[in-house]
Image 1 (cartoon, rainbow, N blue to C red):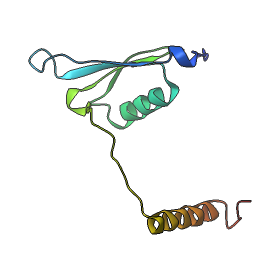
Image 2: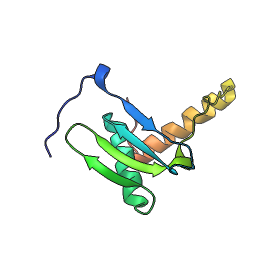
Image 3: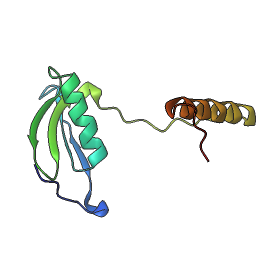
Image 4: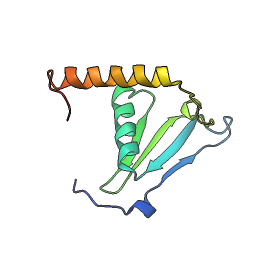
Length: 105
């Protein structure tokens, strides 16, 4: 499948849900590469729940259980200076471990 570039202002994800009495799955279409990859991974690890209906060089159309769709406000994390420093140190140690002990410049 050849890749077709979709401009940023045309990239979208659309979710279509119906009342549970009609159907208990949601139809999801996306042409955003990160969302497409996530949907493919979900389908691969959950073939009994997630079904790829159509995929082409522009987007992907899948069915997922309606219960998987969740709309919520973002979580607000307030970090103290100490917690920020601890997190930065932990990330730096993880980066060094990943690079085999090399230090970022």
